[in-house]
Image (cartoon, rainbow, N blue to C red; front, top):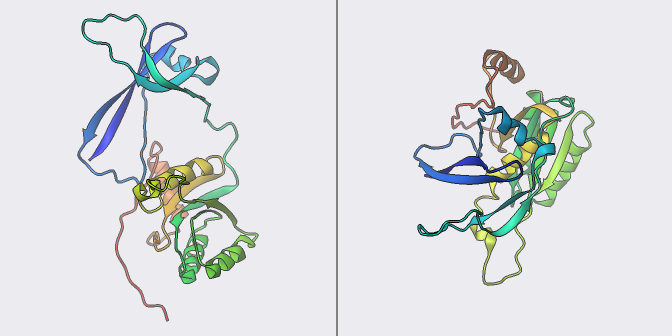
Length: 245
């Protein structure tokens, strides 16, 4: 079960808005490895109001709920934190890369042969941009990664995905992090690739995308034309094993 959050804008006047969160439950599995939020505004005044240059100061905090007998003209916000609202829309056209690959965080990684398979497979598929999320790896893997970083035909960007800092010996926050927090890394990579690549793939080291009878980019371009409003394409997974001589 995962929580589904709706956001509601309540306008009190020209300078004060209340953003409330309504929590509900969904009982189906999210097949995308991340969490996505969408908002629909039917009122044009609301659309104009959320523009960056017209927004008032925004804060996040906990609202104090008045009792049934109390009447308050103002809502009390406890422990408010200022939100810096920015315009995240792209101002420049998409960069030179057609296909970028986001590698999920690697930790205690020593099998350097998998790295060769990963790079060569995606280079064959047309990838020219790679985001490598690194927590820890063996020296042999480091040397091989440096060799690929020296390749002028591809662009590799390392993202240091270190464990959470901890100064309290009685509490370890990393015990609550699952597998290097894959979901956070995927969302982070999608944001990093905006404006740099037209298409972005989230992949693990041992995952291979195969398009029967045609290059992967050709298939994706066909799907984009067929489904122009699609935000993502999911590929059915199958377990496979092959012998390496």
